[in-house]
Image 1 (spheres, rainbow, N blue to C red):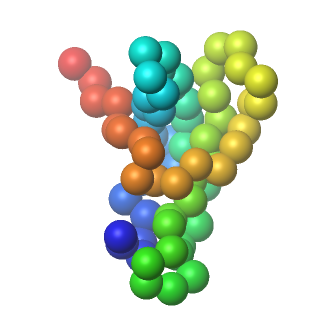
Image 2: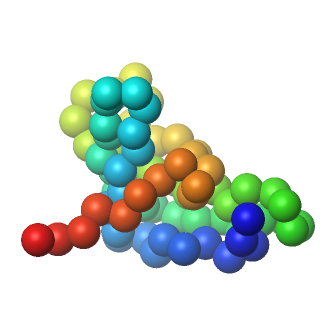
Image 3: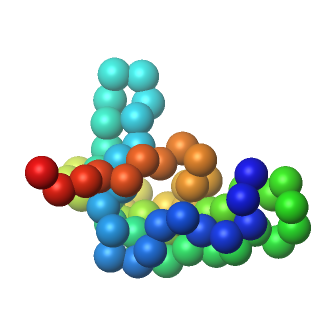
Length: 67
């Protein structure tokens, strides 16, 4: 696990859970407090979702690349 965030504010990320995928905008990131702790990313979700924003561990997110 890294200590520094690999995403930057303004990037689009994807979160997959089973056969569902959510796309969101990175609002901010948090450094891990110490080695072994996860790096958290504040994501604002696109579309209708139960929460507009939430912190997700960066290991569960994938960068959405432009075609």
